[in-house]
Amino acid sequence: MRIHTAGAGRPLILIPGIQGRWEWFRPTVRALSAGCRVSTYSLCGELGCGWRLDPALGFENYLRQLDDVVDRVGGRAAVCGVSYGGFIALRYAATRPDRVAALLLVSAPAPGWIPSDVQRAYIEHPWLSAPKFVLTSPVRMAPEIHAAFDTWGARLRFSVAQALRVARAPMIPGLMATRIIEQQGIDFAPDTAAVRAPTLVMSGEPHLDRVVPVESTRRYLEMIRGSRYAMLERTGHIGLVTRPHRFAEIVSGFVSHYAS
Image (cartoon, rainbow, N blue to C red; front, side, top):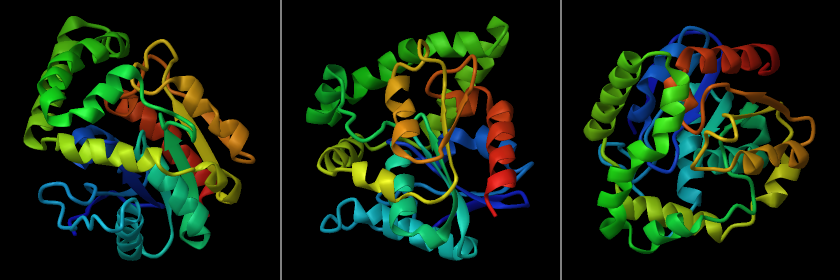
């Protein structure tokens, strides 16, 4: 399996979201590498990831893949799940407590989250909906991109660079839909009670996240004992790429302090 590792310090594993590609947040990896030894990868089934998706295993595919990553990292690490990746990180922390030094959930939907009507339409017809999903993404993300950058030039440079990163690591709509269908069939609530690792819950600002409601992410504070919260200001769902250095500052500080 292909794993991308950068930096030095305490080990941190970054798990991508529903699109499954780590390449979408290259700026985040670079920023995190200044304070952590960050390792990341593309979810199994993605083109070029080097890990076969076994349909018979369902969600267990992602846990076994993460087992391999943790083995290569050194046997114990802070685990950071982004959006859908939060479900993977959560279950891993609940079922492999000895392997998780800290748990970080970034803009992650909590147990009980259900897709919106628009999201359900994508899930039902992922390939037919893909063109609309791509074309409407700039509209969904425009408010938080506008908030994150001070000038139109900076907003344009970010948007072009991010579009190129996405184009070079294309998503697989059918695989994205399958992931959500699998998640909807699992009750993750018992996992929250089983987490023993120090936990950081992070979100953007409520009016800027148009993908996962911030109130859903914040439910983890009630469900995971002792969990802490950080808001990444001037961001919504993609704050880890629009404001990677501030994101890395928060994450590295938490990992340095709590991931022993």
